[in-house]
Image (cartoon, rainbow, N blue to C red; front, side, top):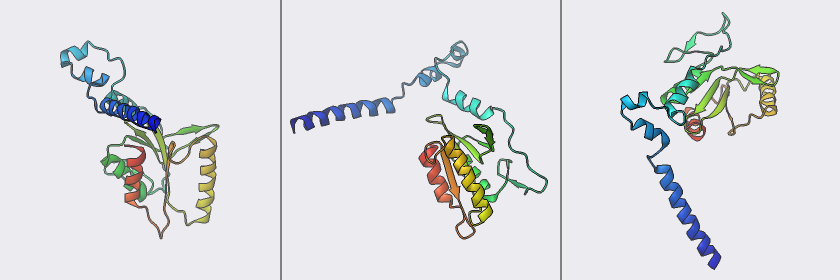
Length: 189
């Protein structure tokens, strides 16, 4: 009992200190941002600024998977060509919540290169997630391809919630936009 009281008090003190640190506005980035613009020019920050990191991540050049002449002409509100209406929905929500992403970014998995629908960045943690949407789960041939993709991802260390996000739909159960928002809030914000 005595130990429990002391341990609880120590935990409360540590919790208070951690909360104070997390809520502190005295970060290294803020120290740089508080400098006058004239001094910023002559100052090299000790670590990459968050805005610079995101800008570099977004601007990394890559070649997405090519479209065939028979592919649908579907575009997001930002002009990005995608392959399905569900991908328009996902991209729109990512854009609305200011989540940086790359469409069909090539990911090398052993000897195989995959092009997940989206490759997303959690700007707070700098953790990257691949996102695959499986939109025809009521078609047996599509499900066979799905199983093969999942085995490939799993064998290379990609698992739901760890570093991958997967969404699914059938004709009877279309993509749930609330679920998409919840997944983004859970893993990417």
